[in-house]
Length: 267
Image 1 (cartoon, rainbow, N blue to C red):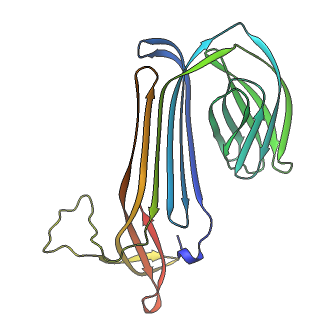
Image 2 (image 1 turned 60 degrees about the horizontal axis):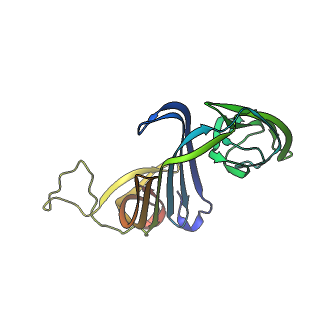
Image 3 (image 1 turned 90 degrees about the vertical axis):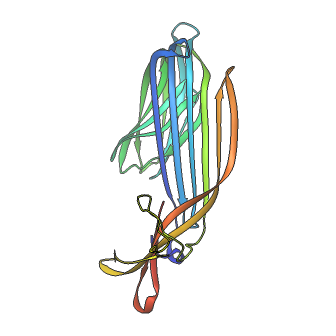
């Protein structure tokens, strides 16, 4: 990262994991759907936000296969995909195209708007996957970024299914970076502390923008909050939050006459 006065924008990382299978959980045999999502955001004002959500659903068929008629509309930009549908039991949205398969969203929706972050380079196919008993039914909608939108009328046969949440975990960590605190002690995890020989900073040489320059390594710091909740219906439900102090190793690069030309944070 270059000097903060010159840097604008943000970085976002999103990851979904989902799995549909038959197994036994807490003495309950049946069809279960596991969904895990994590999102990490970083902005130039040195604020990071990490969220983790885990949900386990128990699925129970409530009737015979039923024919549903509805509409699917997909809107896309280079980095976002939004899906509108009035079809029930939507469980996953996958983008199939360059640079590969991307799970944009996972969960359970009875209809409405879902979406997430995605990178699409040119044309792609958006796959909507619906719960259908112990498997999934897939509907494909072609997408071209030149138009940015696709709408399809769909007729789909699904087994009506009731979903109940039997396990849920929600966690979030928000950290507000402080500006690097120069010359504070730098302690590596593998280092043995010795007060008589320990330096309060580490002067070194680092490779920056095609050349080697003087550099200083020290500890940055951040102050944030952590929140977590666990919910097992009928068994356990608790939540807690606390303040946290986190440490970050910072490497600063120097140019002519000791001027600072950039730095990076290593969490």
